[in-house]
Length: 271
Image 1 (cartoon, rainbow, N blue to C red):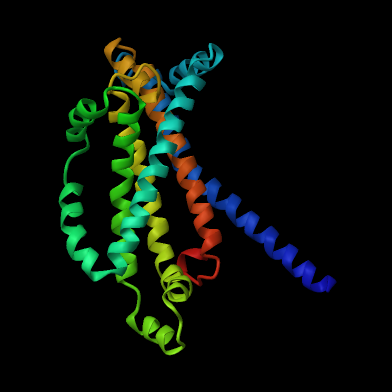
Image 2: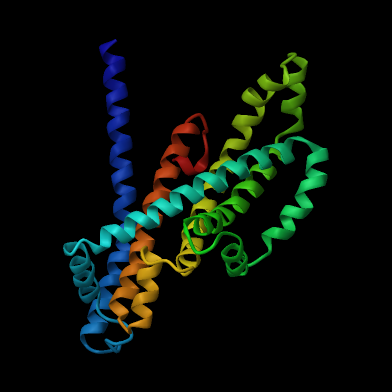
């Protein structure tokens, strides 16, 4: 028993080392780009009124943090993205599962949803303002629209892509519809669903900028536009960097949960 425990501990430690190594490798290119950017900015290769040095951007972020303004902007943006992600992801999960599983519902609903998917994000802004005003409801609705389509498309495709032979084997073993979904469809569609959630979250972060243009007085999108209108490039670049960092952290959280749910996969990418 102690030998088995030792093997498990050794495996766990190896996984932690590999994870740290992946993070270290992932930081090499961004750090090199920042160093090169700083050098070029210091020798005035880039005009400071157009592209300030990273140190100036960091100072700006620090000043916003000290006066407490930054956390308010980050907090409200995270709230909007989280709520929009939950609403859009939930609706997409229900409709994606139904249209993927039922040929009749797919024929009825999918053509309409696919046509709506082609509408640009900014085209929804005046309609949502007309319907819901400039308050939080319209902003969350716009983010939910961005999240909806990638999740819906990946889940529908995942359900329809389940191997027919697996379904037939399940029927041979007399699995009822609920057991068939739990033991065949759910494991088979989970990889595509996780990809859809990650893609939907990425679009949610993109749509929040458009959402926060709609009369917002707080949020990173508001900070971005405020920096542009007042001619402060440090604020603009700081907002962009914060969007990138928050987007990466939230995407990493979903990817980590996905790896735990798909621990049974012996995939090439898990090496």
